Image (cartoon, rainbow, N blue to C red; front, side, top):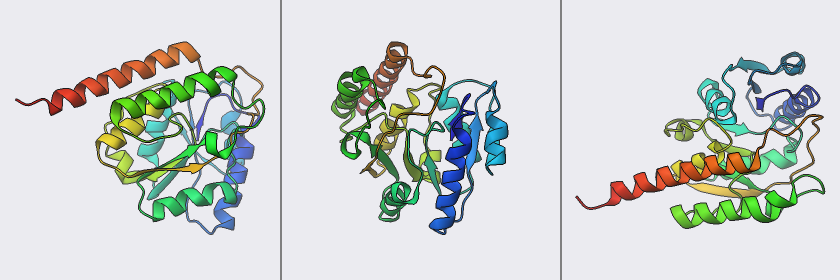
Length: 231
């Protein structure tokens, strides 16, 4: 779980995830990657039973990459620490079932699973994410329904072998693109998005983040087509 000033929610997220591990009899750990919180997020996560990895450099991608490198299990489930995703057994079990069936990367689809009122802005729900998803599918031949969903599960070795470089929110699409380019098996499961429990501004910056996504797509598309050009 990447975390930046989530003191109101991270403890609950860790507690729910811990209960799920016990209920499903999964062997694993809960790793919270603190990205320089100035509140008591670390104390809350520690009290709930998480292992803490502190990463000073800010950035969603920075935090997730560090978490992947530090994780010890064969499978990794990543999700935000703001209660926007449900970590209960009924929500997480399908992810591992799809991994067990052969997938390398399983992405949640909030559009098929449901978006609760107030959970996503109209800009992101009807324009931002659908357009971004269409663009990635068009450019890279993927068949993804929700490129930006933050709840994902994957094989640690498969994703850990990818050259993931993005530091910010654009990491979400870079993971999918590089997985597709590497020939990994990508699947989706319906996932419900809930209003987050934060009492601060969102870390999302719609237009700057969108521009960063676009730069990554163009760079990866050019690299792919240059590689495929005949000598």
